[in-house]
Amino acid sequence: MSHYHLARRRLAPSKLICQQCLLTAPQIPSPLPPQLSLYSTSTQPSPVSPIPSPSAATTKPNPRWLTDIKSRLGKCILFGLSAAHIPQAGTIARLLAHEWPGLLAGAEGFLVPCGAPGIAAQKKYGMDPTWTEHVLWGEQDSMGHVNNVAYVRYAETSRIHYFRRLERAVPREYKREWEALRGNKGVGLILRGIKVEFLLPLGFPDRLMLGHRVERFEGEEGIGLRCVVLSQRWQRPAARMEEDVPTYDYGKGRKVELSAWAREVFKEAREEEERSKAYWLRRREEIEKQVEELERATVLSGKKEDMGGKT
Picture 1 (cartoon, rainbow, N blue to C red):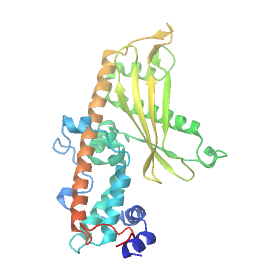
Picture 2 (picture 1 turned 90 degrees about the vertical axis):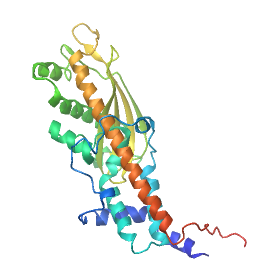
Picture 3 (picture 1 turned 135 degrees about the vertical axis):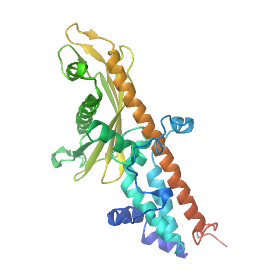
Picture 4 (picture 1 turned 135 degrees about the horizontal axis):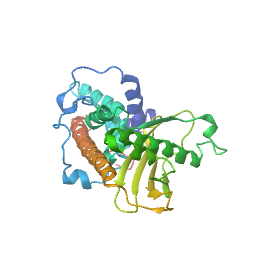
């Protein structure tokens, strides 16, 4: 059996990087290389383009991007790196450990509490752009994982948090009308439908990060929202949801159009979310280039894998 196969049996590359990220995350060298600095706290226009590039706006993020990049980085370390490239590999591993919410959810247009867009949003609204939930033991069912109904409850709380955060940007003269949107008197919002895509069975213990973003807000169809549930235990999306929330006049018993001032609030929110998406897609490209450089520098670069066949 080849040395390559023996090495693969001893340690899976993806697990290697995941464990190294968690163990070494607190020890962050300073300063980091400028091309891969740990998430920037700058809120200047330079790191976040005001208008997303066409490629960033139209590219559908790879849902397995983080898993794949960890595997590739793990193989680089497993196959052997020169002394000059080892610090670079460690820097990338720490970046993945700290910025994984943005590299996953941020690349889909969700604001997360890291990176320039998320930090700017926290300063603007004075609230975390995501909602955190702790998985409870009692939320597990007889199958040994969190019951499907719990995902909908998580999303409900995250949706209210999203509206409360946006309230900070509502003009003062419309504050009461905005607060009424969450109630059942006058004109408010009502959940008409929710579609859940289950991606990962959750269990106890785990801490979840939930984010919302707006998809549409025109006409009597009301508001279309998307939600993502991230598992911090597995560093993966556990579920994605689509929510249909029309504007409803409870007094007249019918749907109504969203007010012009409210559409401006959601328009501003969507622009922020699109800038976040463009930022994190560029961040992915930066990391991919660094990993490709490491792959070219590995000891076994360019050599074919020994599959144990006849010579």
